[in-house]
Image (cartoon, rainbow, N blue to C red; front, side, top):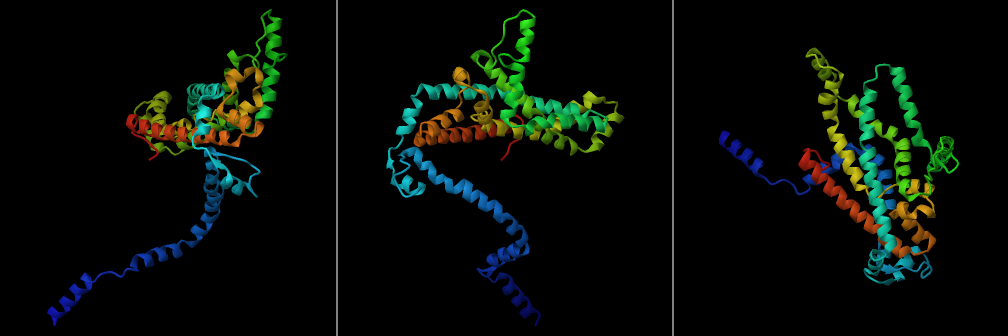
Length: 328
């Protein structure tokens, strides 16, 4: 009897599982977490509607798009004539495209070099403040410019740096020549960098302060017992703990290198500084809406997206190779 029982047990173990077993497990898991999947529906709908469906419009870059050719936008895209890479070829040989690409890269590089380290440094300094009231006051003061529109920011800077602004009035009182900040190609990029730093550096400290807040306080206590001062703890505890998030933010910033700040430039530039301030986004805006050349504008936007993907992948690889941190 014991032998027969053992044989039945062995047969039960060796019996193949039902082909519906995996489906049943997935179904039970889905039913168990049905509330989470229901909460996921709005986000999925947003991604499908605003990210996947518009991908059909990318075909405009390879067609001679005629807006009124069909009964609607989708029908017009479908009926438009294929022209292949003709729009990319005409785009790359255009001197305006070369100027816009050069300005975009230069402005982005300037912002990375001069502005990217500032939120890290500011977060480290704010973390060293001992007065909670003073710390909160400083944070509120530096966060406020983020909520101002670029039109308002332009108005603020024009009061100080305009042709008749306070700075030029002071220079005139000192017997010095005025500086045309908004019409001189030699200084306008500096105005863009300074104004972007004034508006966004404070807001950029939020994620770094959150990272600092998550550091185990026992590390600081152990360092104090060993006689470490504030700067030693900052360089050997706080800063190393921030390296992963710094790497992540740098990778994301590299991916957006061809986005030099459309809203900022559109609000602050003028034809006098096209030579130094016309970027890819403003160029797309002019040829797309100004000249109604939707095909070439789409081709330029697609080119920007492809380069952005390449920069994200390259930045991720470099961070993994140099500091051992990456997004994936």
